Structure formats: C-alpha cells, structure tokens
Amino acid sequence: MTFRGSRAVLALFHGTTKLQRGAIGSTVSLAMLMTFALSDDVLSSSTPLSVHPPTATSNLAVSQQLINSGPEPFVATGMLAIVSGKGSLVGRTPVPARRLLPGERTDVRAEYAGELAPGHYRALLTYQLTATSITSAAEFDVR
Image 1 (cartoon, rainbow, N blue to C red):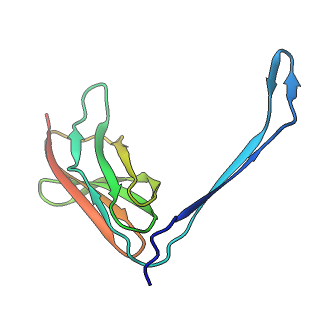
Image 2 (image 1 turned 135 degrees about the horizontal axis):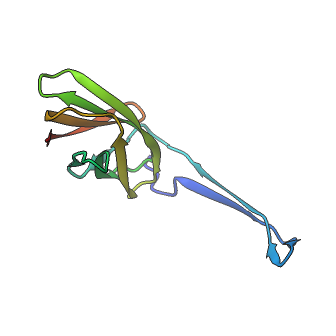
C-alpha cells in the first residue's frame, strides 16, 4: 500500500491575551511542526557546489541547494571538509542541520574560518540523511 498524503502536521497555539509593556503591546503564540516518515524511501539531490575562496576580508564560503526529491521528509546534517592538493585534511566545519519536506529545497551556506595557505584545495560537503549520505565536491585555489 502506498500512502501519498501529508508528512507533517503544524500545531499553532495563538494567544489572545494582550501583554502591555509601556507603549508596546503583544500576544504570545507557540507553533510546532511534527514530521513523520512512512518508509525509508529518502531521496535527495543537490545543485553543484559553489566555492568562494577566502580573501583578505572574507572567509572561504561554499553554497548549494539541497532538494528533497523523494516522498519522505528528512533532516540532513552536514560537514564541510577542506582537503589539500596532496589529499590531507586541512580543516572541517559543521553545516547547520536542515529539515526538508517532500519537494522542498533550501539554500545551504557554510563558511570555513581557518587560514588557508596559498595552493590548490578541494571542498567536500557531505550530508548525512537517514541511512545514506550524499557528497558534493569542488576544487579551488587560494592565492
């Protein structure tokens, strides 16, 4: 049996009591998103990894779009690794976790704040999905 319905429920509790502090009035609300999967059918794709090498005033930055192209929601946790031209790990930095519902896409951006000596490098961005992982790579030079 294949279920093609919703994979998330939003619960919104909207406050009605007005809180007054001086000239500012507000109400309090609370929201919660619950996602659920009915199978292990997780499928993701991504656009090519874009690398912006470090400059005198900016850190190394990478960006790409992550797309949930399957029928199930997932949370992708990621890691950016920088590898030297000789293949040794130079540094790494975690990428904030992203939750994607089926058909959803999001822009992912990460920065590496470490110093990189002039040379040739490879950036590897790996996402861990439920039971699988996907990796994107791009080469760049630091002058």
